[in-house]
Image 1 (cartoon, helix red, strand yellow):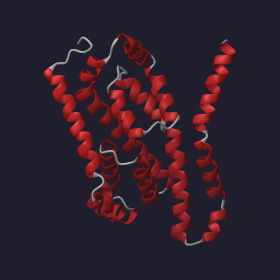
Image 2 (cartoon, helix red, strand yellow):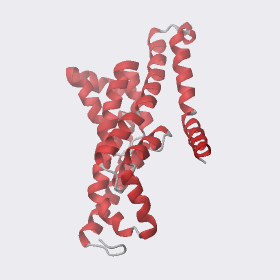
Image 3 (cartoon, helix red, strand yellow):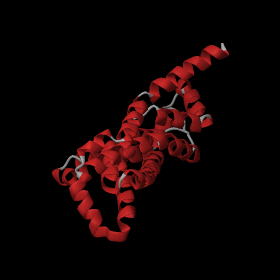
Image 4 (cartoon, helix red, strand yellow):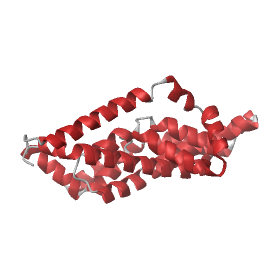
Amino acid sequence: MQPGRFRGGAVVKAAVLIVFIVAAVITVRTPAVRELLTADKMGAWLDAAGFWAPLAFILIYAAGVCLFIPGTVLTTLGAAIFGAYWGFVYVWLGAMLGAAGGFLIGRHLGREFAASLIGDRLRKYDDAIERNGFATVLYLRLVYFPFTPMNFGMGLTKVTFRDYLRGTALGILAGTFIFTFFVGALKEVWVSGDWGGLLSWKIFVALALFVFSLFIPKIINRLKVWKRLKVS
């Protein structure tokens, strides 16, 4: 498709994408959804699911990602309900499934329309993203680029689905573990009622990892600058 020339199908699909996003943002702000997104309500619902609770949470997380529920909210729920370690596993799987879903929605509904808007000046960047898809996705995940917008946005580019999944899988690994470990450690103290546990090694490690994660973007940027200086 030539830039500036729109096909009716592309416009319709782009309109559906916009309506979907607006509807999702409005839906997750309703009282019913907000009430469900608490550890007590979600925990009770998952208890009723029994053996299927982990799978149910993974699917809820994936759907929540596609509906623009903040990932920090879903991750906190996962760690609070399942603990640091299993919470990490289920959160990571849910995030990956949600990331794939958001990407495919953006790709199938918005890519054709987005391609029609790309002129020669922007086309080289689109081609560069395709060539360096894995590195681009990995970098953006490590610097904590907003999770859900990136899922849909990357679907509008030429990056391959394989590179997108690989970059996402590796890029969210450290951040997900750090956050779930931190919340899970706090949960253990809260449940036990032993507030002296706040001085345990696990809390200090969790806090240190959490603080370190906040500096990951700066560290990556420093490494990029150092690499450019070394090359020059």
